Image (cartoon, rainbow, N blue to C red; front, side, top):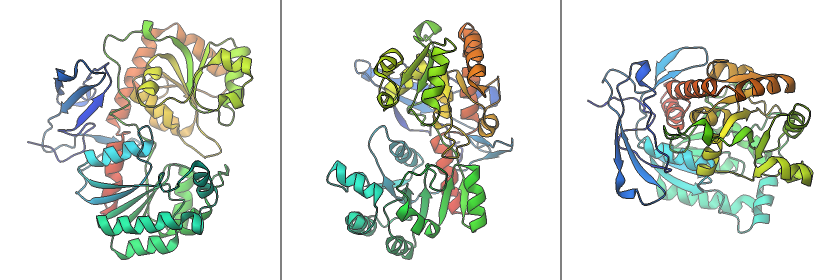
Length: 420
């Protein structure tokens, strides 16, 4: 009999997985039945396999038990089916692309309004982002209303709504559709991105706000706005374990950072390499603007990485470094959740959020200074068995606690029905 709960991979979902495929029964130690796997070998000659993952659960249990940071376990029921108009960038590699896929796995009827394609040129996109007013966004809002009329949604899901006017949002609400404000960035933090002019005018109009930071929870509670606390989540179709044949000999990156040169990171990594002698490998965009040509050639192996390349470079790293954005008031790092979902060793900056979401020295290791980071990097580089164990337990934690897109989006949809 089929459970009514959310699964890490919903029954009947077809996932496209890279050629290194392993299905690990991460839920079995916590009382869930074993995973049955059917591998369609007709795709064996291609780069991708089709993996059909089928799970069976007792009818009285939710398939995922959401464990909150304070340790309260609660089932997450499947959301009822709705028509959803999703406003965002649906290009592969974008986090909105993964959320759209997740909503469809949750059996939602999703129509996509591509906010990235309404501008005719790159310079127009930059103008829209910097000055989202008047004629620069009029066409986008007119096309949105046309999409609203054609799709007749129950929910309009705004992914970083920086272009939409109060009149348009009110017109959407008059149709009876719920409006959801999903914004992973921080419009009220000390980092001034310069794109929030329109957002400040309209954010109070949304029916539900999805919040990622404790600092925003305090603000929105004081403003009396309806919100749900969610988190940076991982995409199970992209962030998963390597094959069981994978070993430490496959990890050619020693101490690795994959990401942008934000805030203190260029100085931190340079000090780690040049003053502490740690073998650093960097991948990410814009590092040429922060490092000299000599340092760039020495430390940076790749530019921006996405999807398969991103995951495989996490796999190839003996130690994966993780940070948070202080100017965005982040509690946890998004990449830290993704590293854990890949089952790899995470050495991250110590923060209240990281300590709530991962048990220190069991599911992740933390540092508070360059010296502590260097000391722990040296210690764990020579201890592959410890790194393997911590990476495995990190993977178990993110699955068990529902840090995936499906669980978090199910919570958001259920909140629209008054279910926390």
